[in-house]
Picture 1 (cartoon, rainbow, N blue to C red):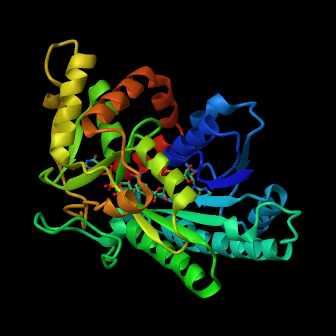
Picture 2 (picture 1 turned 180 degrees about the horizontal axis):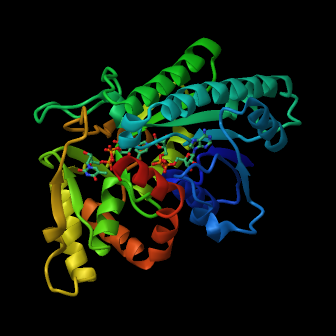
Picture 3 (picture 1 turned 135 degrees about the vertical axis):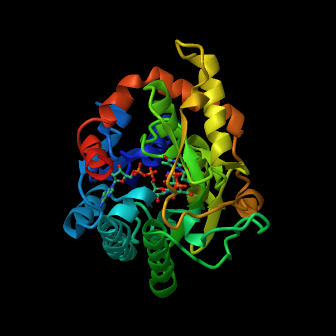
Length: 359
Ligand code: NAD
Ligand code: DAU
């Protein structure tokens, strides 16, 4: 059997490819446009393994997606591909609309045609059967908007109130996915996850940026007062949750995924500094916390996200394996061991973008 993964050269997608290829014999077709955020180095360990078929291309390229679906006959399509960084969406929203909204639309249409074709092949000669096929759309808690300190965590029934161009584009894609189920019967699953962290996280996002900047002797930028709250989930826990939803989720349902790890940004940064002080002390004996620098806040910055993950726990039996304390230690160890990866992904196109926007 085969699954088609989109965006599988990015942070979460590549961790998911590792998860799949490491835990089953199933083949993975990996469609990724290799934007600045996609790195084949994330997948180096599968080079030469015939179960991993990498295809460079766009989810919005209908002819390409049609051809991949017909050739590989996947039992499932998992859509990770997206523009994912809120700051970038503020600087330039067009790519977010193009990939996250228009791209998802074209992908859904290709998948719908493929899925309908499976009905015609129901003679049993062409795997998989139409009834077993699934389209799983990976989305974010940011679609729900921002919480006050006393609000309960987001449940799956919370109204969408996206506040950034990124979250608005993801909300739009979630709505398309919902409509393709409601109108056409496409067997979709949607997951809305909190902030991930772990290996292969691009160092533009808070946790890898702070680790990278700390080691490079650069400022650790805290937006505003640093009291914004995020709910952190170790990426491999996210991958196990997606595998669980793919296996047992009910078509048409959405599942929140979170780690019950709400933390203010400043606490996260201080924790990283304390761990780095132990694991790779500065040569001058000072704490990395001396590099913390308060900077202008992100426009429209959401104050708090928190996920109520009781539905996936109750209905599908999934729980995260890592606490924040164990996950962040593993993450820092990975970055200390993979300085070459960081140097590689922070050169080239990424460097140009930073220079262009931040001088
Ligand atoms: P990422 O930016 O690290 O990776 C995105 C990948 O998609 C890259 O490999 C990129 O090359 C690829 N891509 C972009 N546009 C494409 C296109 N048009 N066609 C094909 N491939 C394309 O993102 P991530 O952090 O791994 O996030 C993956 C998914 O999970 C996204 O949908 C994101 O919205 C969602 N999500 C992320 C988080 C998080 O904390 N990172 C949390 C919840 C949900
Ligand atoms: O909640 C899920 C979302 O988490 C995903 O959908 C997004 O794809 C992912 O990028 C992430 O979005 P955030 O905006 O929460 O992540 P980021 O790492 O950019 O920022 C985390 C918090 O840290 C946020 O409150 C902004 C703040 N921050 C970020 C950076 C990069 C800083 O204070 N300083 C920084 O330099």
